[in-house]
Length: 322
Ligand SMILES: [Zn+2]
Image 1 (cartoon, rainbow, N blue to C red):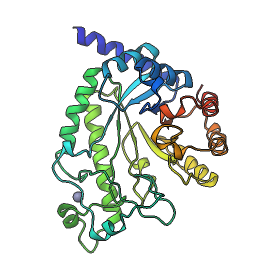
Image 2 (cartoon, rainbow, N blue to C red):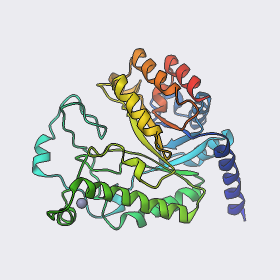
Image 3 (spheres, protein in one colour):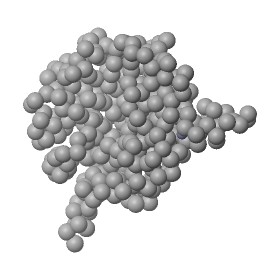
């Protein structure tokens, strides 16, 4: 009985949140010491105008969910379906791709590569066609719902070379003369997202599903509009230098907001170990002028800890989100 009551409580909060406003979501790694305490993290996100937080930690989750419920913020669990714990077959990289995996200063870590550069994601990922994934991920989804999470956010669904997997199974399936490789590899990603969506909604239709498309799929940067998901976040301005020019951000925002199930993801590393990627006030200004045109729409902005203490960014965010 206790479990039924608490899940009802969660659903009521969740219902009222979605009825009144669009999803404004952030995630945090919380580098500043001041944000080590969970209530301070949630309070800070609330003060900026966010109504959802993606939890990136495996500790303190009970307290995190409790604080979120207290403040009317949707707690969201991040899950990485291609993490090796969910399957058996890892993606393979061709020798040719490996030879390009050289260190250069403009590496985008799964974001869209800088002009003229080739990036391979360092992190090992499963082949998205591994048939164990959905069943194993759903075990963690069930656990997260039981903990009180109201949403799940998929991360790291994509290819390490940003376009294909060279494992024996993929090579055999895509090897025919008439196979359009780009379409084949895109379909594998779409299929995994859609299976997960079906399973989550079958389990509990109230659970909100979202993702950040990362690593990007270079043959079609906007395939998020083709997947079944409540909110598919597409990067419209990435964390790392070189920061995106106005024309590009504008074009991407228009495209992403043109699709009803998509929202932009805008990244800021203003502090902590990645401080050298901090955006200038001029860059922040450019981005928020463009974002302001879509005020009231859904959005994903990361990283929460990097916003802390940056009054310039805080002011822009509050104006946009509140
Ligand atoms: Zn494969």
